[in-house]
Image (cartoon, rainbow, N blue to C red; front, side):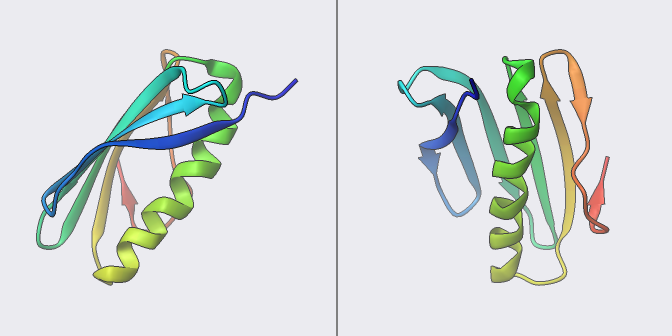
Length: 96
């Protein structure tokens, strides 16, 4: 059985966003923060449940792509963990 995960906004401002990652019962399973600079987005996140790592990646990748549509040409710096393992996003503009 696959665990469905979703973003639940905690704080959203023009400078940063903090989103909780929740399951279908609204239980917190992680969080992600986006910090915005003029030419950069910093993405920091951790998810507790390893078995939904692929779902986390599938959830966050289009979200970041949507954010970059507002300001094309942004550099993305990410530090994302699922369990205790670092994950990388697919994309040429991502830096670690």
